[in-house]
Length: 194
Length: 179
Image 1 (cartoon, rainbow over the protein chains, first blue to last red):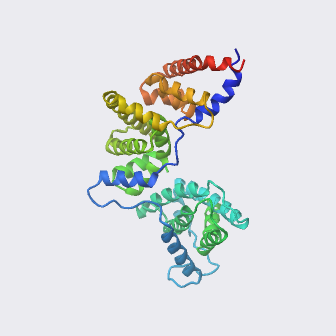
Image 2: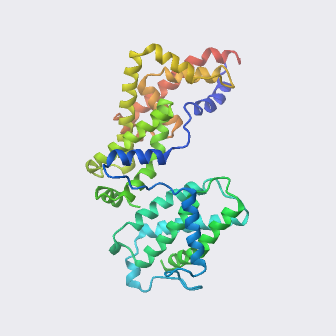
Image 3: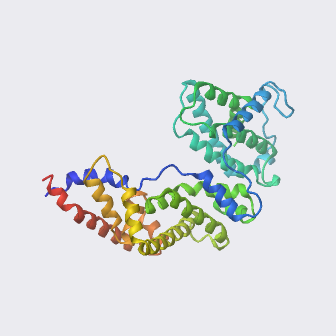
């Protein structure tokens, strides 16, 4: 009796057993938040496409320098002195490094009009971490870092709503979002400083 | 983000921290729940209940084990208890269960081995099936399984071995057709 051939098929068939669908994370999160709190649940879900477009619009305004608080063209906000840098949390540094990698990958994808399949999922994970870091008490974070994290949050929120079928226009908008607030140069500066 | 900081922030009521904790672990918990029950609605309920329990009991986390191990131990307990409750209910409604199973097993493109394999997995004892699904399908180590199920890693290995033997025995006559 030969079980070898069976063994080959077993691996494939076993993995098909109760094969899980994509995790319905937003629906479950809303149910969990509702069950745990009598107050209305603060929605931490990923923004619907309309909100993503609003973020794009806001970034677009910032490109044109139309809102206060945008950096001057060609000028990058950076941490100023060594004392301040000593406060720079290593967890935040690692997070910024991961964001840097993702955004550079997206820039490459945008140049080729494709989007890697795991980019959106990575953006969603990084968005949750970014929001966590944004929420830290002000004394635990450099103001420049907090400002950068806010900008990263906007950009990641835009990416998190993309699906695998993102077209060229959507990718271009993402790319503009990355460029608009000079996120990559600022990330690069942090990496060099550290 | 460091687990200790994350726990501290969750305990202080920061929803961004709760969300981050949830995001980090929900996929694995949901996948296991679905593997165990094979029903999306039920897997959702069990996953939700698991995270509600995690947040309720997070103050009991002492940091002796990794946060991920602790979360998955709590989640596994919720899932197993939920499925045991389902099984009790199913026994009371045996004819309904049969109809449900037939409905949930549509004609598959490869008749024979796959259906028989899946049916054989369903008939494993609870412990063997759980260890088999966790180890062979979801990639948990025996050490993780042992911690989550409250058994020794060696016992987990033994359960897995017996599960595989049982599956082979169930399919042995099928193999003869290939001989």
